[in-house]
Length: 408
Image (cartoon, rainbow, N blue to C red):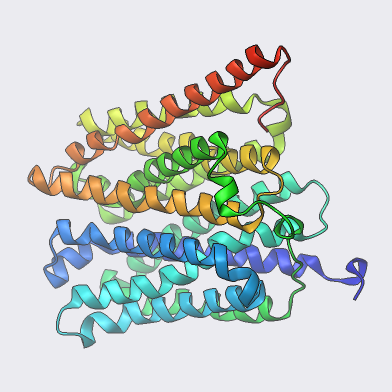
């Protein structure tokens, strides 16, 4: 069928719902961390391994996807991603009760839906990139913002559900959320999916690893993932335990507003990115992120603590799509391998960051402020990496005697 007669809006809808599913997978369980702690007697140190398992699984999927997506086919992979997401969310409602140790029931379920989340994370961007849309940068930025709006929906609707039916009804809600990926299986099975042009004769993994710019991008993605998820995964527990707020208020004012401001940042990038100096914007965002972590770690004032959580969402919003923008422009023939390796780096940060915060928290007698203070290392390294990247561009200008090509 000719491209002009294919319904690529259905492809876009499927990818939107895929990113919403990823938001469900990433944000639903953290809302229940203290519930798991109280109901199942799981220590906060062990609970810290839940996000670690989620992102380590995604990381492994990222590595495998770079080699297998072209062989298996994008369609089979994304259909499988939705199926795994649905199975994992449903399993979360049943496996903790069925297994002798509830912790392992949670971990198995998290692993299953993390496989689905990892697949859509890697394949969603190249699937949209391969579609013949105009203004692809705006379309891509909007795609990534759906993760943010999905996070808002998960947190807001889950909070309303808990307020109406009680937090003990969370297992029913897990099954309800599983309906979205089940429905999206049909969308991905029937929508048009094209092959990414850069995959044919493009750079392989070895070639990418020989490019200095790519290594800086990897460090940026690690720090972006750690900065984002360390705050997002622990914001609900921080609002409850450290600031003394109720669960409903903590969820809405913490992770929900974090996701709102992150989405706003990505929408601004999508609409006005051609008018902004991306490097300065990212450096400024990194400094704001560091400031937010410091506020949350030292302030006893609930208003200041929540302000730090909320503004942190805006500060990290540009990091992930901004880094992808740098690489996709400078390494236009990077292909699926580039998207997969960048996603892998982001997931590596997402796995390590929340785990560090949780373990430092436990070491200091469940003081989450100490955990947040340890999280300052991620935006700090990110800022340093951005200055190195800018210095590399200046050195190239000196060597060539020419103005450097724009990084994005």
